[in-house]
Amino acid sequence: MNAVLAALLLLATSASAAPPAMPAAARIVSLNLCTDQYLMLLAPGRAVALSPLARDPALSTVAPQAARIAWVRPDAEAVLALRPDLVLAGPFGAQTTLAVLARHGVPILRTALPQDFPAIRAETRRFAAALGAIGEGERLIAQMDIRLAGIPVHPRLEVLALEPRGYVPGEGSLEQSVIRAAGFTPAPRSGRLGLEAIAAHPPALIAAAVAPDYPSLATDLLRHPALAAIARRMWRTADLTCAGPWTAEAAATLATP
Amino acid sequence: MIRAMAGLIALLFVLGLLTGGAGFGWPDPAIILELRLPRTLLALLIGGGLGLSGAVLQGALRNPLADAGLLGIAGCAGLGAVVTFYWGISEAFAPALPLGGMIGAAIGCAALVLAAGRAPSGPSLILAGVAVSAIAASLLAVALTLAPNPYALAEITFWLMGGLDDRSLLHLALAAPPIIAGAAVLLRTGPGLDALALGEEVAASLGRPVGATLRATSLGVALAVGAGAAVAGGIGFVGLIVPHLLRPLLGERPAALLPAATLAGAALLLAADLAARALPLLLPLAEEPRLGVITALLGAPLLIRIALRSAP
Image (cartoon, rainbow over all chains, first blue to last red; front, side):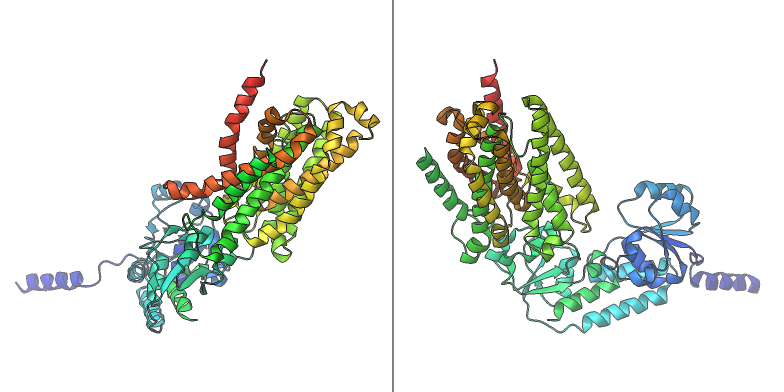
């Protein structure tokens, strides 16, 4: 009887302990700019290779650190040669490569591309758990929340996010989430509005990305004199290209005159 | 005739000022000044330059298919403008944009004059032009692929099919002087073209040698088409169809066509640009149709009619 009880007790304690933790992956390859950044923030020591975009300072918030790590194109042979025990990828693109990797038994973790701050918290926790870096994840979320809480309360001004080619992101976009986090109201218009429509009903503020070094018609459009009378604040493309704890920086930039 | 066309241009000009992305009617004066006025004036000037260039080219090359677009001159102009624009040269020095277009157009003209000298027959000149046009379009695609800005390649539609959307007073200031200068040069080629219509020897004996006429044509076309393509991309068919529309009314004498071709080109491009602006207001279009698409849709059926009528 005692023996049975002891056995049951043993079973119960082992069941209540953490689920049989998978050994955290030691060799991680990321094929997507967004997962590159999560990897470099959560487990930089175990990153074997990143996507080539990770080292582009115009798009990546971890460019200096990423420049010290090898890069790999989404090419199944090249990735398999790195002997990864986990591959991080985006929801779109490189699907044929990922199918080959999956057939070779490589575990694949895909980002869900969050579009607002609650989703960023959930995504950070999910990646932190999968990479065996729960503490790091909680630290990143706490930092992000401090940054967001530090944003002063603004009058509820209407802000229009203006992207290259004159495109205005709509409801449910990351840009609108950032405008809300900065204490403003997103202008209730979206799509390709055209300069005339914007100039005819000007928002209180235009939020635009810092232009790249070289011109294009798409980015020159944002400097058209017809928009010169509308106040404007700049955010960094890299903070918005992917949504992550770093995106709080875009809200803070937008909130600061 | 001239008076009727001037009236039509005035009407289209006013309609152009009353139509735009903000809707029909009279908006904020800043919208008129910064957006609609430069755009409407550019359509007027570029269309006039294209119509006149077509009439002069058809006279000088004695070929009814001669046109800055078909012969690759506009394509070369676009290539020159692309190189100065995407590599930041025109950002540092704004006049580099029309200069790039004019240099490109001049190279295209030089290639054609060489081809015209070697192969004066109609079909081989047009073949040479089609080849120049293909090379220019390919190099344009290569240049946009290599351009350092990530949006460059997506903008190939603008450079190949043209457009006046969101042009500013700066573009007007850059393009207007060369287009007006080019038109002045082209309008003075009339006597040379008339002499050339009688044959090269007769022209030379009249003191209008073919070389001088071709040089003036090249200079004028390089200025008018080059500067236009630098700010509005490649707009085809205007120069091709305008002389064909006018010949039944004004006769075959090249010089008689020139003033009317200028006005008709201006009216045609004003109308096409008005359609480009009005269509997104009337139909659920995500963006404006390209200007070159509209001129081709207007021009190509006319060209087919002319081809069928003149067939033996």
